[in-house]
Length: 246
Image (tube, rainbow, N blue to C red; front, side, top):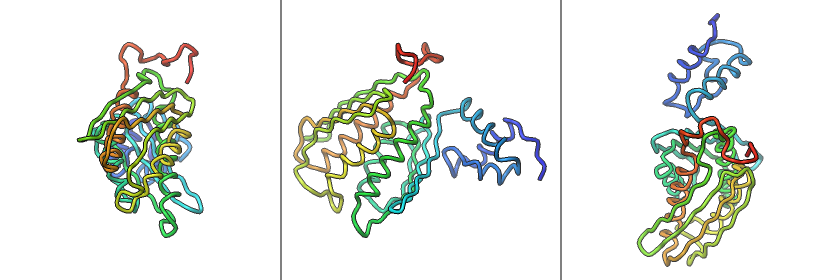
């Protein structure tokens, strides 16, 4: 198939596939256009730079296989297949309240426990944010939110600083929520922080029900992300740092 590749051709291919992928892979665009993968990679980057903030990350280890697709300028849609229902319920909050589109597929060694899968989902999600934000030009950079859920109140503050750091001050009254071990929330956020390169402070200020505590944290996380990744029109071509880089 001989197709003259242009940005328009690649953009059309992306639009055709966007119902399947937040930002289609080079292989999928190649299947439609039949063009050189090297040229597709270059044009795909140009389309990405001019049409939105997307990422499609695949992470494979001997323990897990995780794919994360994200559109930071989405509408809050989500789709998950991870084998960990409560984590999916929490990630749905991030997508909805972060007003971003998020799709995660994961297969892990759940016959052992959920540790590797939860951690690797956090890692891959962090990598997706790092890629989608690129050089971070124009973003607000900082985000914070207080979110109540009945008796629970949580605060999340973050900075897309380029420096990973996690302060996690949460005491869950119960060791498990359903089948989910609450100690794994720390592993999720640590993986995210290390690979998104963010400074993240999470505090549960009060709460008695572990489900309420977790949900208020993830809703606040989504709201804080939404604030931090919002583009400031007055700073479109400026990186939000006096150093000139993040």
